[in-house]
Length: 280
Ligand SMILES: [Zn+2]
Image 1 (cartoon, rainbow, N blue to C red):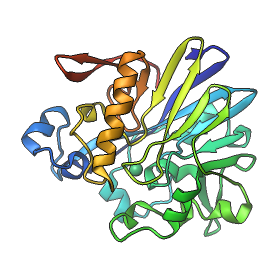
Image 2: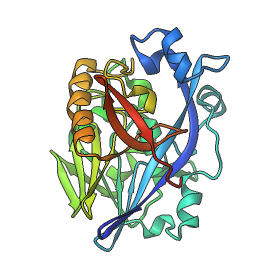
Image 3: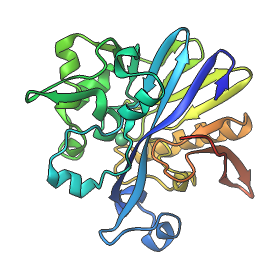
């Protein structure tokens, strides 16, 4: 899809599953299971969506999925599925990892930065050898010393190797990475997660990351139990969703498998998604 001089593709690293109750916080199961059916282990299906961007002569990858550094126990818990995975899709697009100039992680939970690295001879090393990697400085600090509540979301092998290789390029606030690509810090899910705004040719695209992880999370109180600051999520959903509605932004959800993109509309005081089919 083209936005003026900026071009982007929606890619996915396949799907995984998380507990439905944790994904919908205070929303009772009889409500959420109508829109997100649970499997026999109470898990719902989620995608891991990425954006590949061509802009300012650079190849930029936002989000790197879950990667392949998984033991059998965790593979079973999270049920990763859906070949081809992200790296194969990059190759199919003619953009193998060595061609990527900038890798951006909205935050460092395992399902957003897994392909940052891979194991070589028992050691995790950066996959994107010629890239600088971008994240909020405070998120990297938090990832290195998480709380007991969110420790299970952070795996040092996804972010420590770029400290060793000197590839981190750390942000201290919102940033325009190249013209038309803004990274915006949106707290709530955690303290320093970022959303992405692409603009060009009179159009705007908003990638929600975990602010609105799936289409089922569009209603304001439908907020993940994982969120560290749910009331901040609520305020930021109100702010960004209402602007997306007013200005007709194309919204792309971080984890939506079935209808990853669309326009948000307000009908009788409620927000709804009008899905748009784009190639994945
Ligand atoms: Zn997350």
